[in-house]
Structure formats: structure tokens, C-alpha cells
Amino acid sequence: MDNQLTKELKEKYTIVFHDLNLLEQAFTHSSYVNEHRNLHLSDNERLEFLGDAVLELMVSQYLYRLYPDLPEGKLTKMRAAIVREDSLSKFAKECHFDQHVMLGKGEENSGGRTRPALLCDLFEAFLGALYLDQGFEVAHAFIKQVIFPKVKAGAFSHEMDHKTKLQEVLQKSGDVFIEYRLIKEEGPAHERIFWIEVYVDDQLIGTGQGKSKKLAEQAAAENALAALEE
Image (cartoon, rainbow, N blue to C red; front, side):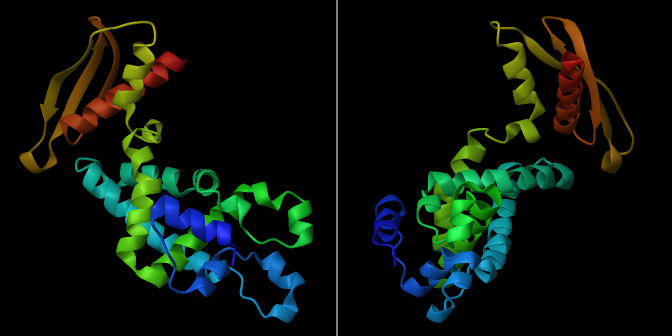
């Protein structure tokens, strides 16, 4: 097993694997297995399958709690942004996983070490191995350290938080006064619809509607952003 990898995991994440074979499997690409059949190694594809499911549950739970007013569609969109290939490949690089994955010569020579799909799979395989080795809480602590701070800091806010994005766009040239005004609400209590207008320095720039004031404000901000981009 790569001693540098185990050292980094211990120092950066306080992770020490009980079963080093699991860790080794997580970092073994199928191309390496194919070129070293005499070693009877297992590649990381099964661990990737497991890690994908574990990650989706953790991210779903985190978003559900972080955004209590967002509907299912918005939560799904943001989760997809977090767990998609380019996002996970960046997390893998930040963890230096790309430096330790074992590749066959052909995969290495063709640039596999920098290939987003390969790095995405590697990240998921590591998480799957960590989950099997030490359980949900330790795997969750790793994701809490690596992914959740970026979500909370707004790295994926452009996917759904239109109010924040609108504020960033409008205040690039200095402070402006942004106001959301409720102009109408209709329907019974359990099916209420709200209409919101958004103004910047008393100038109307967008309107939106939704099943809550917060959702209507997001819709108004989204429409205002679309209008500004035209």
C-alpha cells in the first residue's frame, strides 16, 4: 500500500484504515488489474457503486436540513451539481487522490490520471471503502470536511440560490438597494400562491410566483437574472 497516501489520510483527515486491502482496492483502476492479472487484484468499480449511493444519501440529508423551504425539484438540481463528475473530480484532486491511483501503462500514458470520469469514480470508490471499513459516521465526517464547507460557502449557489446571485451581480459596481415586494396572494391556505416583484433602487427588474413567499422571491430573482443577461 502507498505509504504516502496512508500518511496524508491520517494527517489531513485523521483517517486510519483497519483493512488496508479495502483502501488499496479503492485506488486500483481496472486498467492496472488487467495488466497485473498474476497478482489477483480487484478493481474499484464495486466500491464506486457503493460510494455513489452513500454520497447521494449524505448530500441529500445535508441539503434537506440546510434548505428547509426548498422544494424537491430545487434540492434535486443542487444535489446533481454537487455529485456530478466535474465536481467530484475536483474534490479528488484536492484530496491528492489523483497522485495515488494505480493505473495501467496505457491508461497512464493516455492521461488517465487527469481524466475527470476516472477521478470521479476514484472519489466514490474511496468513500465506499471508508464506509465499509469504519461506517457511516466516519465517512460522513470526511464528506463534512471536504464537501459541505464549499456548499455552505455558496460554491453551488448559482444552481439554485438566485437571490444571492442577483445580489452579487447588482452590487458589482457598488451598493444598491434591493427590495422584494409582495403584490398579490391567492388561493386557499393549503394551496396559496404568492406573487413577488423585485426592485433595485425602486426600479422593477423582475417578477415571480410560488407556493411560499421565499419561493416567489427566488423565482423573481431568477427572472431578473435572465432579463439582465439578455
